[in-house]
Amino acid sequence: MTDPHTGPREGYLLLADISGYTEFLTGTELEHAHAIIRELTRLIRERLTPPMRFVKLEGDAVFCYAEAQALQNGERFVELIEACYFGFANRLLDMARGTTCRCDACAAIPSLGLKFVTHYGSFMTEDDDGREDLAGPDVILVHRLLKNTISEAGGPSAYAFFTEACLGRMPSSFELPQHRETYDSFGETCGGVHDLNAVLQQMREGRREYVGPADADLDLSYQMPFPAAVLWQYFVDTDKRLRWQLVQTAVENQPNDRGRMGVGAASHCAHGAAGDALREYLDWRPFSYVTNRFTPLPGAVLMPRSIETSEFIPLEDGGTEIHWRIKLEDRDEEAVRQFETTANLLRGMTAAMKGGLSKVLDEDGFVPGHSDDATDAMEP
Image (cartoon, rainbow, N blue to C red; front, top):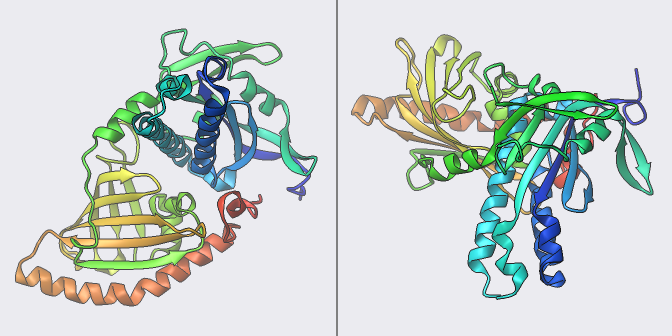
């Protein structure tokens, strides 16, 4: 077997590039401009790592990678980028609204933007004066992709470009407008362009469906020493969830009209002798919470129709507090009595669910840690 620390690896390569950076620095007060860029690049790094690993800051671009095992479902990679852009755009808005400084740098905050270029390929890791760096043709290609004609050709100003190699890791239903670039030594590189401004608008305008502590008929919680972006995958990816979720025996997903799991999507869940149920997703906020309507199908002896929210609350030590809250929609006497029995069973299963999730994370090579350290043990 190839030593994973010296041999070639395979995974996602990503550059998050702050657009308008050069004009911003050269046309404004350097001290304030530098502080603003430093805060934004720190935010980008925090939003991407983990499950990605930070390599280095290249001027206005954050360079990261993730081995295939860290993001086995490509849709989670898309969500990671979308959530990062959402956080970046909101931080820009907060900075612009919150500043009382009248300098040119603070006034120019709204002129900044963010774009992502991504590729899936092979690379070598090497030591660069005590820091990890990457090398290989695919690493060169993803850097070349920063110089592209997407916006000049009428594309969006805020986007994520996924090469065909990346798109091959996505669900077949995930379709994007095509774009091509040609580079010396690489020839034509094809891929898809994801409009992040459209995503931002959908996320800001999306209706909030959330079961809070005061609304819940049942609130089960436990803490895990892993960041939310890692744990999220083990709740929304079918194959991962079935490895630790008690009782549930099968899941069949039905994507929404955009070909994605999210608002408008549904899951048909089988629970063995307990029967089947339909989960319809009402709110989908990656790495923060997901809310669904739970409807037992005919013949099921599960809990009554209800609204469920699974929430992931970051802790200061880099871990996450997980809450599973349930609010009954059917509240007649029989439904309440049935739920009391189910609630007692679920309370008794909480420790077993936490233990099962911990076991699966250990099997997959994750070790407790903070930020980039949480993926230190990811190996082929």
